[in-house]
Length: 428
Image 1 (cartoon, rainbow, N blue to C red):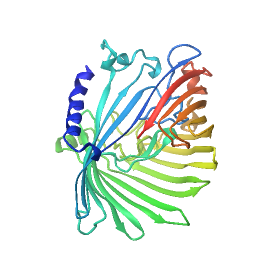
Image 2: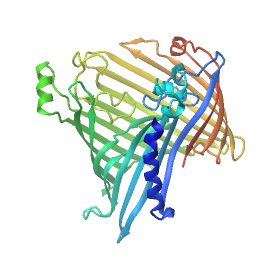
Image 3: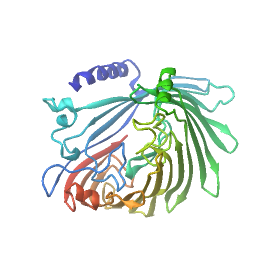
């Protein structure tokens, strides 16, 4: 059972905490969990996930418990040289709401006999940082291990448009001209019939480039080099194929806007990283090896994405996050994919701890120039109790109701099916 696998981790963490000065431990994390039902009966259906993003917004569309627990400890601080150790464990349980599946343990372990067997877990981060130890860049931070590396996301979509996380090593925050330079090397393995195929990614970022008043530009370039074994290379060549290298580029402008911020983003992915500007977690996945039928269906050779999103505060009592996305991709066999998405979540503060949120979303995906039955619309309203005012105030207890409509909802017998639920979301 999963609880047996969790206990050794919990014991190790607890032992570590009691063996050091607890006041020096930096404990933070993220969590969401909730319940829901529908007017048609049964569990709610979810159209997005943390892996695939929520292209009509995530409010009322999350069907799992997900928790990240992060522990960090500064272990050395002398002569402006600082060493820090950080780790993160994550847990997920489908909660019996994933596409109408039964209890949470059935969704994960069909042979399970108790909900405890439904927990999946992952060691998401384990790395060390060392600041002020590199002579030519005294203000920079050296790091190595497994980590979330400078991720970028659109919160209301749970979409990480830059997420080159994993095992790696790097030096970040190097003072260079008007901005800061960060360089890293990150590994990524692709599961394939011939075994795991490794790609090595060079990640170079230059941030804080000043533009007009209050605006900055960040440039990110990631190149992936396939690193197969000689046996893997020979096997692929025998099939008439070859391994692919790839690249992924991001340009992001951030500026102050209506009491908040706005970001304008352009991304381009090519070859083994051809899907990076179309799918979620851009820059993370590398497809260096063709599928069983060669480079073809579903494997994107190139993609482009344009985004405009931000959070604004037009009045003291109103905050709103919005996102507009247009992306397109071309597969190796010439198939073309396009997606357009528009989402907005205005939040009205009733008082310092209560608010009302309305989330409206629309998305449409096209295949080879025609609607493929993937358009989806959503409205969702929530009454919220938050630890303070503002869009980002958390933890939050929310009670929500709303509906989905469009081709995707109709295909799932969910057209205008009213859902009602309660959820918590927290970060600390």
